[in-house]
Length: 364
Image 1 (cartoon, helix red, strand yellow):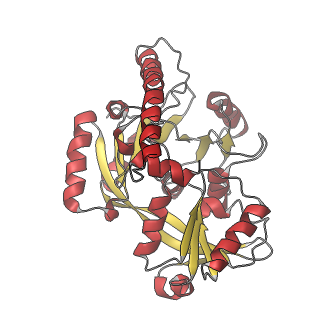
Image 2 (cartoon, rainbow, N blue to C red):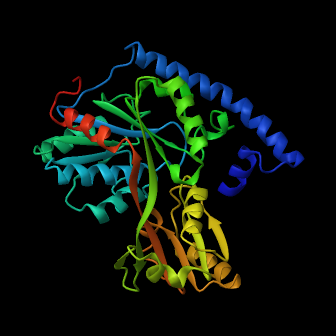
């Protein structure tokens, strides 16, 4: 079963008899999974499982659903904002999808492209990785914990949770019947909730979503943001990246409007597709791979053949994908959209709260 097949079955788009049976089986499997998640949270909530501390402020960026809510752009936004405010930040992440333990994964490679001076340690044991990071980089003032909402072994100063406004609650069911990693009631642990991709839904839908989140997290700061394409990054034959800012999107994107083929291996491919179409890009075809997909030259060859057969002259993907492709060859030009976070509501309040955390006084 491909990632596209799974999403079509879980979302209910596919209504064949076999899809109905598959959904029933997935719901049965989700029951013990959900019970295990609730039991684990109970043990942490009541301090029956130990939580470890690091001698720095920890800002956790996470979500309650599987897939792309915008964690990497948010980590980039925070790293940039902290740097501009004179704070020395570092990043801790699990490294899911890395090909080998000594290699960084796609998110880390993307962030390194943008912030080569920011230390970024990856390990399943992020407590141990954080201790090593602070030993080797004692100047670090703030730790950004990537995908940290479910990593409860590490105590955090603040939990910042992202919710994709276009798919807020993962189909309303726990994985594998839906895309929820834990129940929406878990939002009660969050101090900050940020709705992403709010530019892709109607204002009345945003207000309905805000009211629902308030039921789960009445005390949280609630912000709204959009994913904004900031640059077109093209990969040269030697593997180098050429970045073209999109202050004038028409100029940079003109060759991609009508004869490109979209592909990606991210958690929410529909979000990428919607972003491209909002820029006036009408792809001749699409191919979505599983999240963190480890591309090979054979995969690219098949992809290019499919794209060329559809009439494509160019390939367009995400930065998360492009950083894994620089050592492969492309018969067709390949580029990516670099995405930034832009706040539509709550940015000033967010930085007021984070400034208190950075100063070591989060309770004021």
